[in-house]
Structure formats: structure tokens, C-alpha cells
Image (spheres, one colour):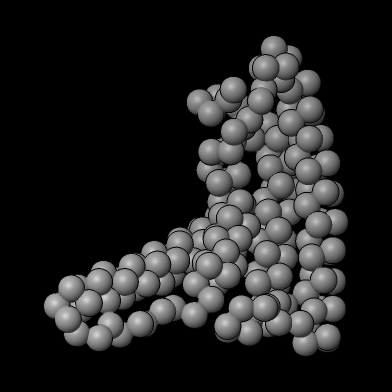
Amino acid sequence: MRRALDMLYTIAAGAAALCLVAILVLVSLQIAARILDFALVALGVSPTRFIVPSLAEISGFLLAAATFLALADTLAKNVHIRVDLLTTRLPERSRRIVDGGVALCSAAISAFATYALAALALKSLSYGDVSYGMVAVPLALPQAVLALGLLILTIALIDEAVLAFSGQDRISGSGSAI
């Protein structure tokens, strides 16, 4: 089970990385087209006037997807910023209980957000909602990706709670505490 969960988190992080690469490619393409147009105008040739339609909007969708898809992996690798000034002073058993309880509360909040976002995506799909840019992106698509990221985060939070309650948590000893 541990291997399957770690693989799920890694796949989600890989998808997040691909979203960032897609943003890089789209923005680079737009910049290269502008530089080419500038050079063509300087040479007295008519510019290509090439643009990437809805670049800002699509980049925003990709950035949101990257953020949400990376949440579970960063939690599992213990690289989220944690404020543990109180819990580090608790006895080991109490710290595990507090850490597990916090993870379960966070999982409940994340599960509710997952449900709400999935319901929104289904509603957008049923209404045929699309974005307002030059490229009409069905809004259910980015909303579903965000819901998927939250679902994987919910699983990771439950995983963290189980690890904390069983004394195997990755939380203690982290160097990322504030």
C-alpha cells in the first residue's frame, strides 16, 4: 500500500511538472514570436503577428492545476511549511495524537473542498460553461483537475494521520519548521 500511495503522489507531482513545462513552452513561444516580429520590422519586413490565443487564461489554468496536483507530493515529502512550535515541546505520544488529529481535521476540510469543487465541475459540465477567452476552454476541465488534486491531497492527509497515530509519521525531525 505504501508503494501505491507514493506512486500516486509522484504521478500527481509529475503531472504538475508537465503543467509548468507547458506554461514555459507557451510563454516562450509567445516571446519568440514577439522577438521575431521586432526583428522583421527592423528589417523592413511585415511582422508575422503570431500570438498564442488566450495565453494568460490557459497559463492560469495550468498554474492552478500544477499547484493543486503538487500538494499531496509536497506533503508526503514533508516540504510544506509547518508551524510546530507547540508540538515539538510535547511528549512523543501527545505530539503524535496532535499531529494525527490535525491531519484528520485537514483531511475533512480537504474532502469537503474536493466534494464542492467536483460538484462545481459537474454543474459547469451540465451547463456547458466555457471560459471567456479567444479559446473557449470548458470550465469543467480545469475544475475537475483541481478536484483531482484535492482528492489526492485528502488521501495524503489521511495517510499522514495514519502514520502519525501509528508512530511512523514523517512529520517529526523535519527541517522545514518555522
